[in-house]
Image (cartoon, rainbow, N blue to C red; front, side, top):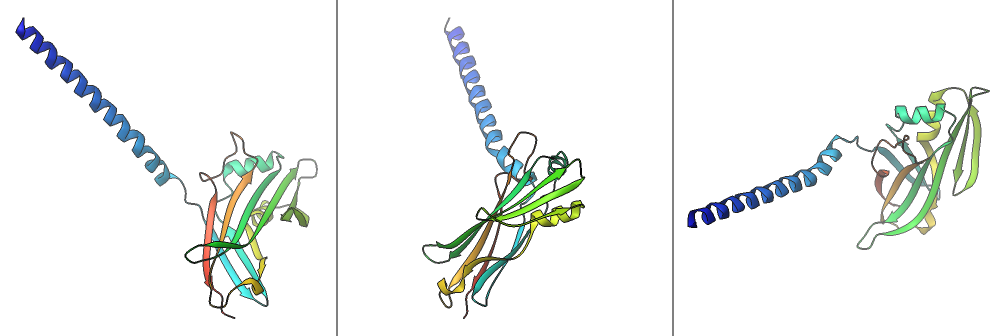
Length: 196
């Protein structure tokens, strides 16, 4: 009788230990998976070049690897597609603060009848430019490359102050079959010292 109780206790203990080990193993796998997923995901890449001269802070930036097959397919299907960029000029220090911000959007829509792309750009919701294009290379440049975009007057900057320009990119439409090549938003940043 005593041997049966002892055997039952050992069996119960082994079952409990095995159960705990299984739970621990599942926990390790679940914790490790996000790290593995991040390692395999393509890195976001926006190159940013700020210039402060002639009374203006202007920013040139370019996003690479944005035109995945899914993006191209969405555009070719006639779906209106927008890349939006949030630009921030920040004063670096103990307490970073935003000095200026601008939102730039580039939109393209393919017209299946004319076989042309209709492109437009807005800055803070105001239409800045619109034009047609016939080549996908022109669309790619329109959506991902920006030269000397005004961000702020230099009058608000402090001499010898440390600043950074951050560019965040996101896309519309958001749906299940059209996806951004990165999780969340793409990000680029560059720092500069304002010398008057």
